[in-house]
Image (cartoon, rainbow, N blue to C red; front, side, top):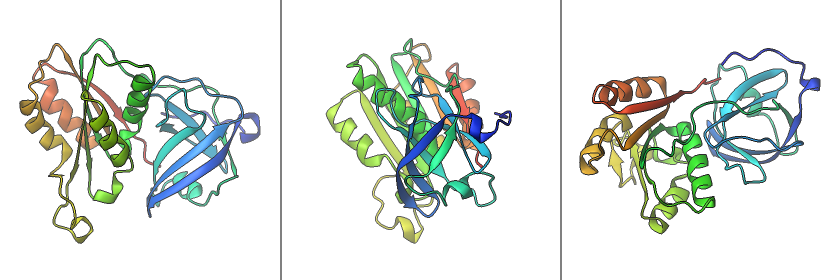
Length: 243
């Protein structure tokens, strides 16, 4: 996703309305563009700060007032260290158009979504929008992997939705269950790209009615494609640029 450089003064602005520091290297940021951004759930926006731009998947649904982003700090990155110094009230630049084809495909009744940490972002957008539209004919199987239990930024929201809607199933899993930081973890254990096969057997999902989405770490995505692409499943992917 190489971006052509444009002077920040020529780009629309977006004000930082809220930031929540989940861990030392994970943050939820809500911004409000001066001109509303039109986008499809699953797409990304390109934001900039101090002369550097990068694309980030949008967490929020199009009907929400603010744009919500779930960001991971990359210490040697070009943009995220700058964003970690930004405060509420400061202004970012934002491209006029959202982009990306990693969007909801309604042709498949079964939606199997596999994510690592911040890779959950486009799935949250899709599900929020789906429920906002009052739809109910699809089943969402959302599997999210992380190293530590405090990295599941949307766990409470997804667990609440799974209790309220029978067609939403959320399964978080930690890959380092033996570490002190996960001592209170009572859920699934193992890498998400490995346990997904276990749940594919539990909820037998045929290839014709199931679309597999994979978003996040490139290694996870390649493994999911290898595991399921060869079995006849269509796999839709979104690899994150971590800077």
